[in-house]
Every structure is written in structure tokens, then in C-alpha cells.
Image (cartoon, rainbow, N blue to C red):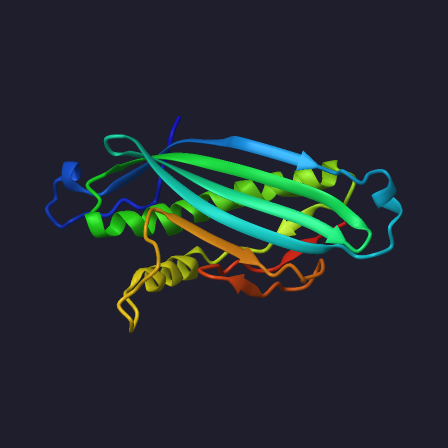
Length: 200
């Protein structure tokens, strides 16, 4: 049974058929790759791995009033001794959207939908890192709103009349020099991905 999203607001008309409605139709793993290329030697390495986390959001219209949102998260844990593990996850949700104002559609698809998907993707990544023989990697929440606003600013014409590329997608990365348990700085715009913490 599909879940009704809490975004369901009346428009003051008293007509439920005219109210904005968002329905979660399905959520699923679209693609998943997990590698631990240096095992079992990596289990004896003393160096603390550095983490690089990148995310991307892709949106597809699959039918009238139906959109697929794919949250792609790539995690790499490396040290001077080599690669500890690599995780590449694409986690998707399909949403039925009706009577939503046109200006409200991009914020939902690029902010709210990824926010709904993230806890599930986070748990999958934690399980995958643990199944490679390392402590579970618990990603800190990603500020999708800040990433969306940064993307909007990038698409605005600059002083020279140029601007960034538009489109229904968002990208981001956390700093590659962050060690486990530390906050990661945002190095790539329009990113705002926070730090990661492996927990044992």
C-alpha cells in the first residue's frame, strides 16, 4: 500500500479534488556496487581512512503526474596504504504528484523527495560498509535545501551575463580530507554534504 506524503494542503476551496497531493508509489535500490579491493590486507592497516562522499539527484518524468527521483551517493574510503572500501548507491523513489503549483514542483523533487529517500539510503550504506568487514558508516544528514539554493544561484546570470547549467538535478560532495568521525567541509558547489561517522 502506498504511503500518503504529509504534503497535502488545502487550497481554501473546500474541494478535495483540487488540493495538492503527493503520494509515494514505490522506493527501491536502482543500482548498488560495493567493493573492498584491498581485503583482507586492509583489515590490518593502522591508518585511519579518509572519506570522500559525493551525491547527485536525478529526476525523470515517467508518466503524467508521476516522477522518479534518484538519489545517487558515492562513498570512497582511502588511506595512504590503499582503498579500504567503495560504495556506489542509487536509491530511487516514485512519486505521484497532483495539483501541485508549478513553482513548487522543483523544490519538492530536489529537496523534499531526496530528504525522504536519504534515511533509507543511509541505512543501506551503513549495512554495506559493515558487510565489507569495516565499522558501519553513518552518514550525517545532507542539506538538500542549501544545495538547491546554491544550484539556483549558479543558474542565475552573473555580472558578465553568464550563468551555470540548469536542469532537474543536484550535485554535491564532501571534502576528501575528512577522517572518520570528523565533519567534512564542502568543496564542490553546489554541494552541502556534511561529515560522516563510522560507528563500531
